[in-house]
Image (cartoon, rainbow, N blue to C red; front, side, top):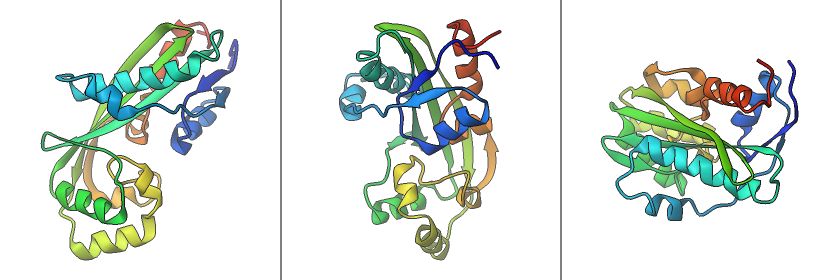
Length: 199
C-alpha cells in the first residue's frame, strides 16, 4: 500500500492502534489530553453523533497544533442507552451499575473520527452500531467483572468486543470497526481524499 507520509494517531487506544496496524497504515501514536467534559458542555443540544465527531476533532486539534505539517487522526466513542449518555465507569461498582442499566436494552455506540492538518479539518464523520444487550444476571455481572476489570474501565459500554464483550450481546447491527471504536472504512477514504493514501 502506498502511503505518502506516516500520520499521527491522537489516541492511546490499543484497539485503534490494532486497526491501523492490521490495514498497514503507518502512524505515530501521541495521545491527546483534552477536557472532554468541557467540549461536551459547549455542545448543548447536539446529537450523540455530533458530540462524538466534535470530540474526535478536539483530540486531533490538540496534537495538530504542535505538528502543523502532519495529518492527525482523532477518534472518540460514546454510548447512549434509553436516551441517557454513559461515560467510562469510574469504579468497578460504577461498571456494575452500568451493566445493570444496559441489561435487556439496546446500546447505541457512536464512533466519531476526524483528520486534521494544521488548523484545517480535512475530514470528519461518525458511524453508529446498535448493540442489543441480553438479560444479565447479577451472577454473570460479578463473574464478568472479575475477569474483565480493570480493562473495561477504559471502555465506554463496559466491554471489549475483542475479549469477553460478546457475552453481553444477543445481536449487533453495525460494522466491527465501529464497535471497536473507530469508523475505519470512513477513515481510510478520508486519508485517500487527503492524499495520505494512494487511490
